[in-house]
Image (cartoon, rainbow over all chains, first blue to last red; front, side):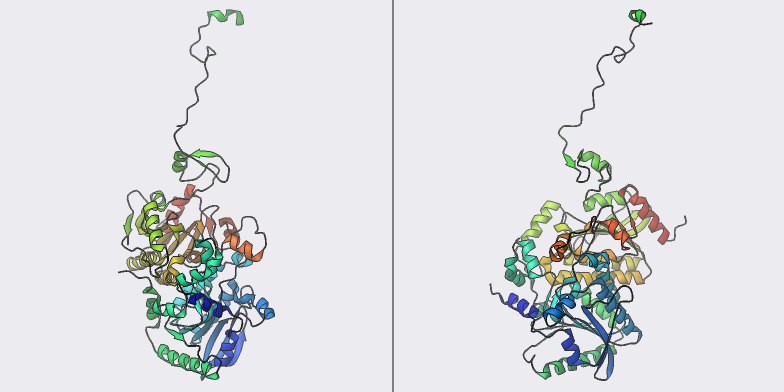
Length: 259
Length: 286
């Protein structure tokens, strides 16, 4: 068995990768950050705000891991607390009201795991996002740029289009977690990564995502401009669609359907 | 007059000062279960007679079939979607064999049982998760059955009562099981937008992807006493944060305290409570 999948997991986690902020800077103009969930706090792991995508105003939400050790500590390593998901939902509701499309960038190992997160209803916050995003009456596009860890990533991925970078991963559980549950040995993570089918290629063949974004020219400015063109084009398609919500429902409804 | 005692004729064995009443012997052959709360060994027949609770109030786990016979009106349950079963979408190592063993051991073919039933004379859709089937984990078939239950309920304008018990998403089905969270949530939302009632009863344990989807989306959320309900596992939290967890962390009472559950529903009056709530939401007079 080749260990290709685990190599991609390592790449997805590597600190040299572009984070949410880089994508916002690379693609949008006049980004203005909005803070707080209006209920409890402002979660530093989730960045959200307004920006222009070429000519049109959009709402952008990104899970931010941070670039260096200090930033990562401050951003909780990109693991959102419930208030992060509630902030995201608040901004999405606002986008719906003002008929702005929503674009999410997801990069998280999972929702934050802690006493406070449980006390403030991590599960409920994610559940609410899943429910509300399903009927959010405005186009939503999600791009998985690094790690897509379980429910914590899905809470921003109930979208009309989901794209993954070539070296991003999307999984129900971390390979280490899976290995330690199944084989009581987290050192078997490479095997687990292979079994979990968590790469962009696998997700594409399972019909979970719409497109895989090549990282061949990731160092060049064309990378962001190409992604921008793709977003603009897809939003154009989605914006005029009267059956947007039915299609979004069907997008998820067909996964695991048996006849 | 003690000296005339010899004239007195004892009427029965007891007045003779004779033998004590023989204690009723428990059936020696009957298996016993030790209650983890009060540490008493109780014969299983007595636990069953008491809706799977101990005299101290501890709630033992219940299989889905037990629960259905406990909560529904007699012979009113009719099961649906039994043909929806998990396949092995990823070809995950050892999963197909695991499914076979679990099916044989639990006598069920999936981790949730769905259908329609009467509760207190009110018709509703019911889904009950099965702890003995891979800890009620949600794979594609569980997601599909629950989604269909909500779609059926929305179509026939019925309320849904759901009993959750789950370790979360089933990792052997990878992303496919993760997507079931979104799929079921979508179905719940449509059912809700149609103005219909959804009641969840959280039972021990409800965690992970099920907590983060349909378990927490009920209009009214009840929980059984002492049930563990949370998103991340307690042990994982302890390991990552290196803090000792507060007493009663992630228990049903903790969730009530923090505002995520409406009320605790002990089995003693659970059925009448569920029946009353159904009646209140479905046009019943008091």
